[in-house]
Image (cartoon, rainbow, N blue to C red; front, side, top):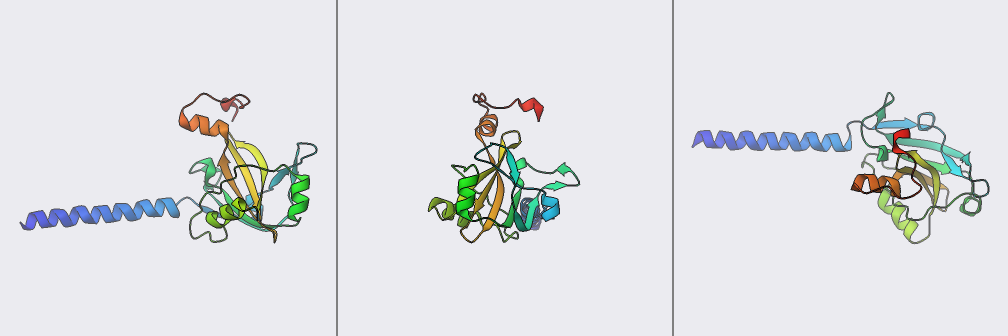
Length: 181
């Protein structure tokens, strides 16, 4: 009977260690905190010209799973928080809006980005969503949401091309060649 108890304790110990390692990998491992210079220029698409323009931002901070130029996870791991210099009205009139913006959860330790709060603000029309960059990597767009006080958030979200690839479906018309990425 003691051998069975030792086996059960061993199995439970391995399960607990495995669960803790999996949690660490999902929430902490691979993510790097980024300052404004590391986040790089965040752009918005001009409604008049269709061309990208640098957004005027302050206090930029972000996270991503790119470490020393190597992506450790999928392209949708990027999140950023910042302050916008322009009002929502100016942004709405000047740049391309984005429908169906769905902020993705960030690890809890990146506390400036709360996907639930951002999503609720977008749903009730308190925040506006703008297209920052289409196909930043194949099938992935960069989206920006801006709150009334100028607090802004950026994340990467699958577009219809990316959704089709991940679902195993044929690419919709207008998708770029995936081999070019």
